[in-house]
Length: 408
Ligand code: ADP
Image 1 (tube, rainbow, N blue to C red):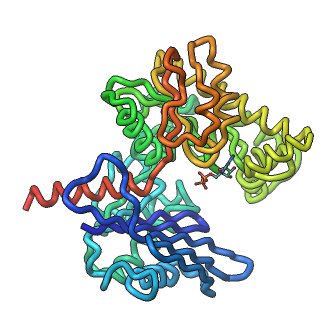
Image 2: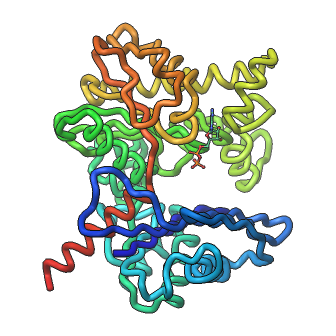
Image 3: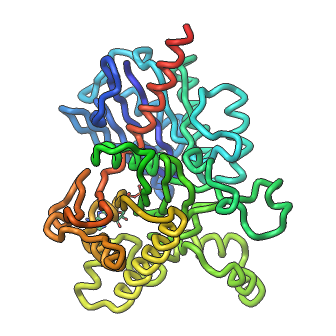
């Protein structure tokens, strides 16, 4: 069975093709074809990189149109050095990461015209992402006709968060207006929780897990009985932890102050909070943790301050999540920073020494992947997991495919 996964960001597009033989394996499979596109708006160019097991292709095409870019990508699957199938009709099912499913979708769904209309309506909640996801869905409809398409929502894993954690302490009417904590990175949090249980050989339902997804965007999820019971991102992906260029949580009164005193426009405020805050805003250097660490080693004080705030925020929210979980069995680090920065992991964990969190420093520094880096006597297991959102989406497609087979 061939499963195509499309993961569209606001200015990027990741895609991959999996081939599953008889049953879904325990370990994630490597895709037989994968592609990454970065859009360069200034030059009206799309930079494309396609990889298969035996070939690699890098090129630029002069268009900003997502349907045209996708059509081009799909062609590379059937032609030239990156050919892995004879024709697109060999693709059995297509899975899309859709950022916002609102309160409407608590799990992934088969895409129908109704679903498309709802994703369109929910674009007011995710203006940079849902429209990009829809373009992907429509491009597939155009090129692959009636192939079944599955929407896998980044919010769905958090849809069971209890009201006390989901409802903001504003006016009661906000509830009926859909103003609440939705949470994001759900596909990654769900994948890592399942993988953590698998690595430890324990039942997911028996574990209290905090998953730290630390990429350009950062969020924590508190997971109990296999469900997210709280998360740091909320109505938008701006809340919670300090991120690469996003502020994370700030005093809401500050926004009123800035609007009143500095006459900021909404666009300016949006830009400040999303694009020029976080590690970048404080350091003035970069949103990239590698550059922050390099600058610290050269003695840069602003980089040090940015790093210290980043760690402080992480410890602060992990503390809050431990209270929500009423304990902790597993702490997971994932995504670009979580998987690669031994310093971040060590500095976070040392704050929880009093709870018996103890890591093996040698293991921590040896690029662990899907490994427990806690010492045997640690009261909490500490895992580094390579997040695989695309594989999680492929698994959701497989589940849909199977349930459909069982019906027929
Ligand atoms: P995204 O959220 O866009 O998917 P990633 O999960 O790929 O991002 O994370 C990107 C971030 O990972 C980079 O901005 C960088 O700060 C961080 N990163 C990648 N490699 C390292 C490393 N070796 N050490 C520290 N941070 C790293």
